[in-house]
Length: 454
Image: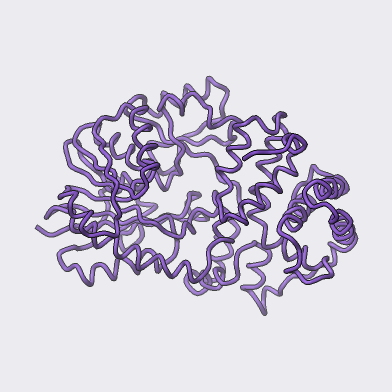
């Protein structure tokens, strides 16, 4: 992301630029933020931390911030230019949530940012924020008794349509807990490359490097850093192929499939290979894995990671998983993983922008796509083989609904429970793997094992 010299070391202006690109391009914040930090901007460590805090905090609380902005802007809400709205969002976030930043400093910085990024709108920004400082305590929110969905949606900053669906599916108290957990800063979870080191060895190495590290709760391959290093991407342990950034729930997906050394395994929607490399480690680099994806750039990144990890059993295949001809040509496998494209609604702690990009219409488009991919994957499973359907979503229509529809049209498959060694605390009464941020402290994941009859 190219930046003019006047912005390179101003964390608030940088935050506005990143947030505006997230809006305009329907982009994810993480790669945009990473590109700025990797270029050395801002230069000061404290400013780098402030930039990250402002970007993710503003995205998480955007719904509440917009509610407040619209209370103090006397024009029509839709007439505020995106960059002006983001200047105000960043300022309101500091006023509301940054205890160490004086409100007047947030206002002054917002006005200065408006002069650079939205010339001519600095007086408007100043007027709105000054009004807010005087009248913030008098703002009333939707009543939790008469309008519980409106209250949760506003106070916990989630789209109303999503809150209404969650209340219908999970109940009011569970929805409130889930929304609250989505706005917490998640810990940094890392998976150990057990082909090169044990978890205890890596914990000792991280501790010697001055990092605060502990064992993950659910994954036997994971460690947790309670404080994220400022230069996390440049950690030597990651560069050397000893650690991989991966949430605990995501780590459990490969263990749920439980591949054996010597087996033939297909990762049908492999992406950059987070689960592929884990499968290879569980197989002790013995057997064969085909990692398939529609994007060659993802497969190239996967190959690079596999090489760095010392993995030799993976080969890649560029295919469209919705094409039955292409998937059938891959052959038959002992185990098949379908980590399906999904809404990502289980990862809102890490990817808060999803809640603002996703619509009900987009959500409804996932299940048909997931169903086609799962049906194509089934043709690749040997008799007696195992098929795992997984998502990072908490939505019934993407999870249980897809599996139920699949079983109705594939009588040669039947549900199976995880192996006895799999953590019981993430398996529900139906035998499905299921996690939630507010229950397990992980991202929200789902997984269903399906066995093909002999």
